[in-house]
Length: 462
Ligand code: SF4
Ligand code: SF4
Image 1 (tube, rainbow, N blue to C red):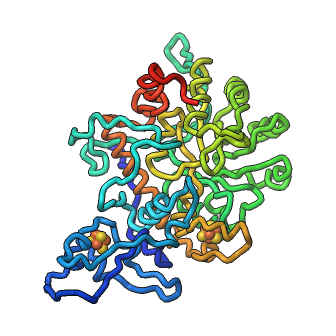
Image 2: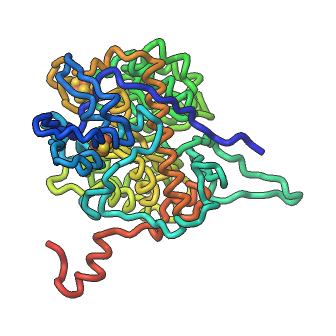
Image 3: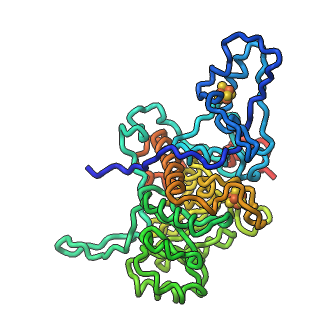
C-alpha cells in the first residue's frame, strides 16, 4: 500500500507576541477573595501563561484567550470584563480581516484547526466566498474521517495537459503518447506575495517549504536568487520577454515555468517546449472580464496550465464594480465545459485565497488547485500593515526570519489547511479532491437561492 501523505507539523512559537482580539480587564478592587478564582476555570490556562511584552506593550492574554467568556461569567462579583484591542481591529482591511489574519497565525503556530471558544459569531452569509455554503450531508458518518486516518482521503491533483482520448492499436497497444503530467499531493501551489519584505531569506524559506510539501513555489525570474537553485524541482520561475534571454540558460532542471499571457509570448513558449519537452508551461491570465476568449483559445492551442488570477481581494481586475473570483472561475470553467475542452487543461486560481475553506470553494467553482500568497506572509507573522509599501520598517522583521523556523510555520499552516480540506471532503462523503472540481451541486450559492426564492416575489436584485 502506498505511503499516506502526511505533513509534519510541530508547534512553532511566534517571535513576537501576536495581537489578540481582546484582553481581560481585571479590577482587583471589590474582589471578595472567594478562593475559587474564575481565572483558574480557564481551560486554556491563559492566566497561568500570561506575560507582558514590554517592547510591544502587549499582554499575551490578548492572543492566548479563545474568547469563551468562561472566566467573565464565573466571577461571582462580575469583576472581569473583556475589551476589544484597538490595535487588533486596525489590522488588515475589509477582506483580509483581523479574524482571518489571526486564524492563519494560530494555524502557523500550532498546525491545528483553530478553536473558537464562543462558537461562530459571524453572519451566515456575506460577500465573496461567504455567499457559498458547502455540502455537509455526510458529516455524521464516522468512516469518512480523513484526519484521523480511518479512511484515506486523497488530496492529490494532476497538473498538466490531458489527452482528449486514448488511441489503441490492433493488438491493444497504446498509440497515443501522453503529455507530461505532474502530481501534487495537495491542491495548493505557493507564490511570492505582491508586497511584503520578501528578501532572499524569505524566498529560500518558501522554496524549502515547497520542497518539504512536494508542491511548487512560483517566483519571478528577476528574484531568482542563487540559493534557490538547489530547490529548482519545486520552483516555477515566472519569466517575461525581458527576463527570458538572461534566464534561459538556468531553465534546465525545472519541471514547470510560468509567464503572463500575451500573444507576443507564443514564440517563446514554442522555444521552451522544443528545448524542454517535459517542462510544463503555465500561462497566467488576469481575470479582467476579457479572459473567456483567451481561455478557450489557449485550451484549443494545447495549453497545459492556465493560471487565472484576480487581485489580492479576489476581485476582477480593473473593473469599477468587480465580480468575485469564485464567479469568474466558475464562468471560465463552464466556458471550457461547453466547448468540451475542460478536461484537457489544468486551471489554477489565485487572488483572495485567504482561508482553508476558500481552497475547497474555488475547486468547487472549477479550479484544479489554488495558488496561495498572502497567507504565506501571515505564517511569518505579517500584520498586513503595509509598512513595507511605504518603505517603513516591518513590525515583525519578516526580512530576517530563520529559514528553518519559517519552513516549519508554513508546514504547520499547510497541515491545518489540508486537515480542513479533509474535513470538508469527509463531510461530503468524498474520497478524492479531484472529484470536487466543478461539483457545484456540492454547494449552495446565496445569489442562486435568493433569486429562486425571493426573486419571484420581489424581482431582480438591483
Ligand atoms: S475568556 Fe475563556 S479563554 Fe479567555 S481567559 Fe477567559 S476563560 Fe480563558
Ligand atoms: S508586517 Fe507590515 S511591513 Fe511587515 S511584511 Fe507585513 S505588511 Fe509588510
